Image 1: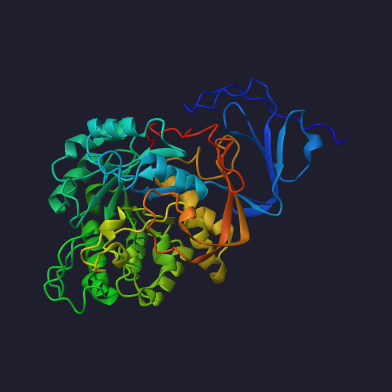
Image 2: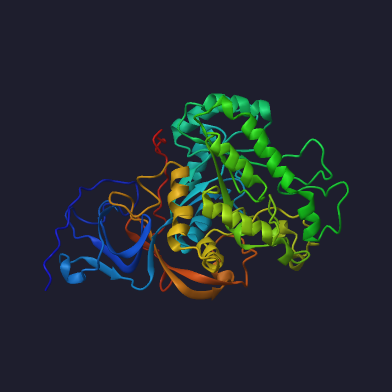
Length: 504
């Protein structure tokens, strides 16, 4: 028998989850190992040792010593040849509760996240009612989330006209950043901001440890199209074709909407040179050179894109298939290729779901009695829980590694929201948020794979490569493809409300 390894004992530290005190002090660790483990910058054989008390990683051994090397009672799993990866940190999710819970809710949205290896989600300040634009509204959202979260959840605040005096108090209350729209959001309780509103917000936030994020679409001063509202609304005054044709919708929101908005943001950057600025869901390749130039000039500007912009193409969308409606729109395949290049170069840093669900009827789908009108359909793609498989399906064809995907979907998203040191990486002292991934498995997406509330997604009936087999949250298995969700542990996610630090 191999000698027992020297296993460090860590004290019990409560993290606020229901399972934190499940094991006595000094209990043997949980050990997860594989010949393929994604550690910082490398894929390597490794064994991950987890404290059953704190849910933290207490050691990482770059070998697989076998169960006899550990103390009696050690929970030991060798997942070889499957891949162990950090749980995804989805930094852009709309959970919509309270107020529009029929669209989505904390229980269904976070359960869907757990199915797909997502162990942390950050909830957008809309489309819940009320929006997260004051500390009072944040407290209502926290109350609605209590006892419902299958994964850990953080929250963004919102910037709207007139709420600049609420922003610093929201930072202190623990929001991970702020979101604003430069074009109408489609919901009346979350109006767009103009340059004056932004200037006030940036002045208030300039010394705070936070990130200010922008839905970067604006109508240029001179435009051939007036567009539609961001999420729903009337058709353009002069549509280029039938309203059920995706090409008509795409033409109504040209790349100039995005580039003009990014230029507007950069024109205000000097107000708060230390404030991190962030472009959400960049879809137009024309925005990439602007981001590059700004960063070379020293502006603190980052950008994200979404699973759907990297994997879907406008020319493949059939007339009336409004499951694909989102804003900014899904663009052509050649544009998609350029987004991949920008991602590989590091100009686009993160990939998120922008899970933006609604009830099936609001999608105006013909099979639900709608007319397939892209201008009346609600704009948003439901993807939470499918993103890793979606990204790997396209990415492995492009020579992308799982290390890179983990960087884009875990480490850098955790950095974006100020959670490094706890989330986004398999490191000693960090939360043991781990997914088990089979990169060779194939499955065809059906309603049984959609754990979000409304089973509407453009990925339905698509065959994906790579499947999440298990999800572990802070050292406890919460989902397994074989046994389903761990109802014994249940919704044991915690709310991530620790105020951000400047160093993160």
